[in-house]
Length: 312
Image (tube, rainbow, N blue to C red):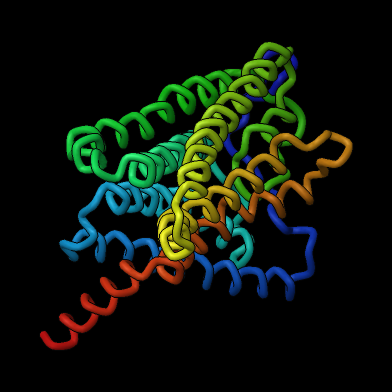
């Protein structure tokens, strides 16, 4: 349908990795399929084990379950469509489908930013106020903190997606990405987007930097508390309780910052796709692996759970 000088788009074409040879696309499909299955199984296993084992009913594992839910949702939004573009060359996505994908991408991404900050606060309370930890992080408080981490995703996703898809689109309907992210869709708009771009930049900075600063603040206090512990064994034990989370945080925020805060001159569509792959596909797979390999409680709980299932 044509209105004025613009075309009402009914579907988009995801360019994805179509410029690569077919053989390489097939290899990518197999690689991403394995990563996808490992991500779903790993995060599902974390959820099941932390629910089933009474030893893992502490606040830290409550927040870890929330993180695994987010990672599963993040993957379900992005990866199945990407796999379709690689295997079946099904690169089209409907206008509502693109909007829905973008909405949930923002929702899960924002929620994860804030949840990682809350998990850092949980580690701060556990290490700096160990005697008051059960009182401060009681069941009601941790439920409120979980809601507080999930809630910001709703207004951010609603405003940004609704505003962007209200613009007229003209020319090509090709989105040069493997999913409907805001910058490549914005390039299709034939209207003045200055206000939206300012909003998007400021919003991105706040959404990434505020949780990041909260994480840095929590870990600076944790580091100060650890240095005051007299024994090397005590220091190692205190650090080991937060090392997994610190590694996950570093992977997530570094890849996210490199994707959205790089200068435009160094931010080609192809390089952005590679960076986006890291925080949308690779990091969700690594999180359960990191928590499983670096956490003796999780490893022991996995062993107990598997042993019980075998005996049954």
